[in-house]
Image 1: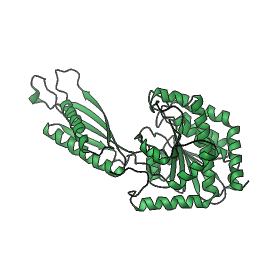
Image 2: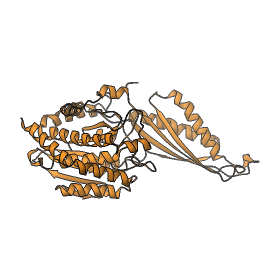
Image 3: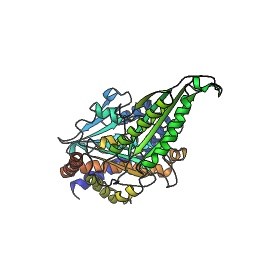
Image 4: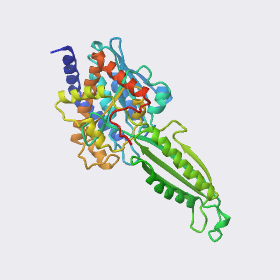
Amino acid sequence: MDTNALLKERALKRIESLEGRIKQVSSMIHGYAEVGTKEFRSSALLCTELAKHGFTIEKKLVGIPTAFKAVLKGKPGPTVALLAEYDALPEIGHGCGHNIIGTSATFAAIGLSNIIKQLRGSIMVLGTPDEEGYGGKIPMLQRGAFNGVGAVIENHPFVRNATWWPTVALGDLTIQLEGRAAHYATPHKGANALDAAVAILTTLNILKHGLRPDVVLGYTLDAESATPVIVPPRARIRIAFKATDIRYLRVVADKIRKCVNGISKSMGVNVSITDAFDRNLCFEESIPNIALIETLQRNFSELGIAAEDPADSVRFRSFYSSDYGNVSRRLPGLNFAVAVAQGDVSLHTREFSKAVISRKGQEALIMATKLMALTAIDILDNPDTLRKAKKEFHKYRTSGFRSVPLQPIF
């Protein structure tokens, strides 16, 4: 048995010896169900587990209260970061399975703790809060939390096992409309903010017919109107919109802005627009890395687990979004999927929240933990793996991410 195989065998045995605790920690985070930026108990729990196994912990990383970094150093070499998420959804709880993401990253790293001195590099766990909100990875990137990282690995619970989990670009606009109240019998003396909002949303639905077929729009509407006999003076729209690449997302944002400004002006309503692009808070599409995907595929095979081919993942693209996409455009990365439920169960539902702590969900948790650990070993034990991944990433980046495999062409 070669050195790589021996290292993997030891890591797997380590993880298997901790299976009870792994499942317990995942269930605890599931029970906490803390929403983004409030994940204090969840992040503290993961830090405690990592500290027990010799990791150096830095809490409140880059000024974010529930972000953290945990590092265990091996021989001189690159750093592989395992990305942990642990925020829940309001009311639904862990309907996206972040309890699995955070726990698997933590215990994959712990699984390497007894062999780290034999690996050419260091292992890091980055605790990344608020993925369901404004995306904690984005300010973490901006503030240098990923500096010095050679590659990242993450996973996501899903309804199929897949070596690549494609995600798309996401933006949002908040539109505040300020009109003027009046008696509804004299509407000409007022400026109806609600009518302006309805006109904007109606026009957007018409506008969508002229956009690329990959564009997805969603919105909410709130109006300040105590009674229908008063012209509504205020309304607020929040629009979430998606496209398969960030470049076209900018085109969509510009069209929405023109629509909003034109309608509000024609109706005598003042408007203010808060745009995710202006705040650098858009989620970018995820960039695949074939070298890392192929490395992961071999580990799926070694564990005897069937996984969806990346080409099929593109065909079944479900238009999910994640701040992982922003990371994947800054350094080589890998984000794969593990099945916690059957295909008729949707993410962001109570049914999915139940699935992530079901027996199948716990099996997926252990599977994800093992796959992350094995792939990290391949990256740190074989310098060629990371060298190929970096060369591939550089090729995509120098093309402005216009020449990337597994992406749709319009």
